[in-house]
Length: 302
Ligand SMILES: C[S@@+](CC[C@H](N)C(=O)[O-])C[C@H]1O[C@@H](n2cnc3c(N)ncnc32)[C@H](O)[C@@H]1O
Picture 1 (tube, protein in one colour):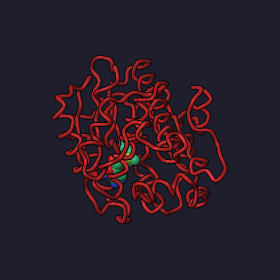
Picture 2: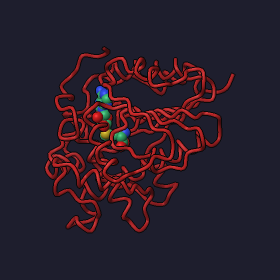
Picture 3: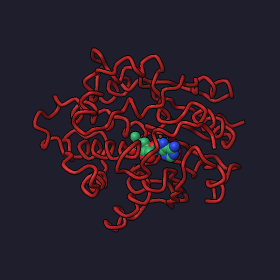
C-alpha cells in the first residue's frame, strides 16, 4: 500500500464519498450531451444518474435546471466537465491513431464510457481501474442497456493505493508495448505519495511512443477559493463537499518530474481549450477552476 490517508474512501461505490463524484461527472456529461452545441456526447451518462439512488432528482439536461446556465453547478461546472471530456477524448484518439499504442489505461475510470463511445482502432484494449463498487455499478447499468464496447474492455477493480500494477499485469498489460494513460479528475483525491507512486509507475511501465494525460490543481489554489460559487453550489445543491474530499497534503510537481525523466510535457489551463473550441468556462473572480491544469505528456521513441 502507498499512502496512509483513508478519510476519502469510507464508501466503496457511487453512493457517497469520492465515488459520488463519478456520478457528478456523469450528470455533467449528460447535460453536455443534450446541449445543442455539445462539446462531447455520452449517451450512457444519463443512465448512470437515473439508476443511482444517490443522484435521485439530479438533472440530466439543462432545461431541468430552473436557472439554467446561471447555475454555478449545472451550468458552468457541468460545462467544464464537458470541455474536459472533449479535450481528453481528443487526446486519447490522437494518441492511438497517430502511433502504435493499443493499450489504454483509465486510472480512476469511474463512469467513463469511452470504451463504448469512441472509435478505437482495431486491436485496442481499454483497462479501467477503479474501486470495486464503482465498477460493479457501471457494469450493472451498461449490462442493462446491452451496451457493446468498441474495443476490448478490461475492468480492474482495485484501489489505486494497493498493488494495482500487479493487477494490471495479471490482466494482460504489456510494458514492452506502448500505452496511453489517463488520470482524469483523480490525482487531487489521492495522497501525495500515491500520486508520486502513480506517476513514477506510469513512467516505469511506458516504453517510447507512450502518452499520458492528467489533471492537477495548483496547490496554492486548493483552499483559496473555498467560498467560490462553484464549491458552495456543489455542497449545498447535491451535498458534495469537494474540498473535504481533496487530499490536503502538499502536492508533488508531477509535470516537472516527468519532464525531468525525458517526457515531452505541455501544461494547459482549461480556458485554453475554451478559446480553442469557442465555448466553455472563462476565468471569473473567486474561481475554483483557476488552479486547474491539464497536463499532456509524451515519451519520445528512442
Ligand atoms: C471525479 S471521478 C472521475 C471519474 C472519471 N475519471 C471521469 O472523469 O469520469 C473520480 C474517480 O476516482 C476514483 N478514485 C478516487 N480515489 C481512488 C482510489 N484510491 N482508487 C481507485 N479509484 C479511485 C473514484 O472512485 C471515482 O470514480
